[in-house]
Length: 347
Image (cartoon, rainbow, N blue to C red; front, side, top):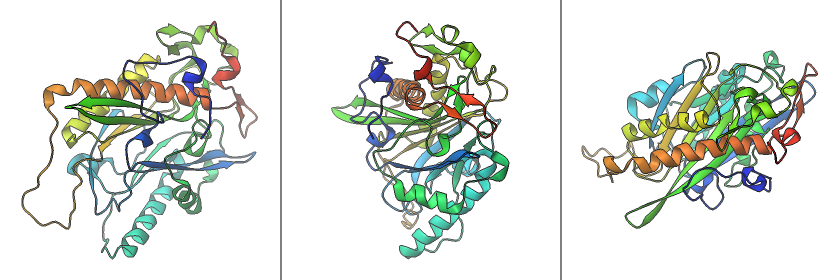
């Protein structure tokens, strides 16, 4: 998907190299799909992330969640924390559509397991949300089951960023927000691994926006800021093929906060920051009844590498969201401006 991202504007962060596409889908097997609802009344949608090409119910992946600020309505995180695995795709949408999207994920998994001859009697869909009510007539709950299945149909390694899918109605640092992604390569024992980030960015204030250490927010047109306080939430999904267990993934998930802080977010009272990390290594097959499993473990004292990769990828993912999003006028005729409409080289 050809879009002008942060690096096209000369903005690069961090020291680690990016993956080939600089997206979360640089992690082998991960795909992302959107379905956007864009009408005069609705600016909303749904985004799905498929963690692997296999049926995730029979190919469970190690995972962990970290809630930095719990002003949110996510579903499925309790079981992820208890069992340390994900067993469905992950869906992102707006606050009042969480239930409908959850139901669609259940139906998706029922159909997939039926096709695979798997007896599904319980499943733990993961759905995360941000509130797009400033641009979207959210009470009408425009996202339907059909939109969720359309997002699955659209899923691939190449996907759009900005105000698409779940990001259509989002606002980030007082500017048009949405979905962004980035990745980092990591070298360990002569092998290359990837850390990828996908963000649903709906947080921050323009006055605090900081890029590469420069506080650019005050130099932009503050009169065009969509909001003054750090409210609205940010969902971060982290994927890696590095063999990390659930506990280590929980530690990595916490480092998403570093990327947000570098951009100027102080994690405001009304902003729900929810982070989830998973690894495609060491999948668990519940059909294997062996008492013992053989897994590859990553050395604990080497964790600085994935910590840095996660922080850098999240920071750049938010920047990619800001640079690819476009100015949008919502259902109540209020306009949220894109960073690129206010950006100058001096900024």
